[in-house]
Image (cartoon, rainbow, N blue to C red; front, side, top):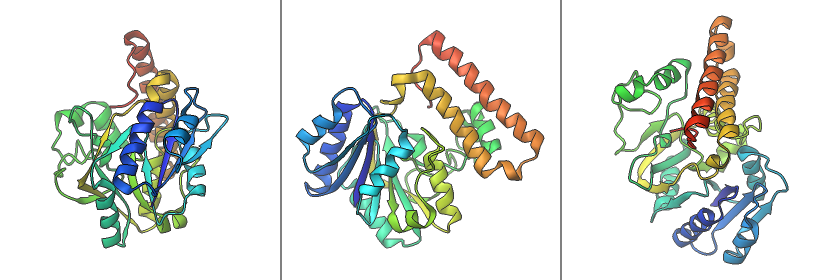
Length: 289
């Protein structure tokens, strides 16, 4: 197994993530850290604290997907663990994901139950693909009003219990165990996504390639969330919305009438403009819930 971790100015979180990873997997486990030109001394700190880690220090920030692609080139594992530097694996988390993939050969990827430090669930751990209608319900707040509705909260699978393993459209690259044989067939991250959306795109291609993706709730990890993106809220808001349009254009636009495509484009960028103004006024640092 190989853990791929992309970091950007999150040294203390990354060290804790690596500490938890090696404590659950053993000192000889493979981990590749690609650092996106951090200014906080991350590469040297990792080399000193965990000399067994492969560290790739980039001279510029190439984005999340491209950095992961570089990490994959260095890895050798049959299973590839996508792991954010602000995720702390709990005991047996990775073992349970690996056991699930081993027992289900049709599974291309499996993700854990992710919880925030205060115990709230990280809803990105189990998602449906963001169809235009699902996005509309989410952005208008209907998904929060009708949390258990299979229609209005389809994106976050509100009608399906989070306490049992089940098939999902997509997990999150914050913590997702992927079968390397599946990646070899469908490709890894699309470099058109700088930040956000690349995990949805990967899961979409995995499913198109005949693989299944699962949520495994007895595997648990804690996700602090937003440690990198809040460092540059306005650029990340732009990338979040650009990823929305990139995903739609790539997977849905050809099957969507031109007028509706134009309305979707307008809706995405109107939302970006509104949230950008709100972020400047309120100094809100969160990019997404």
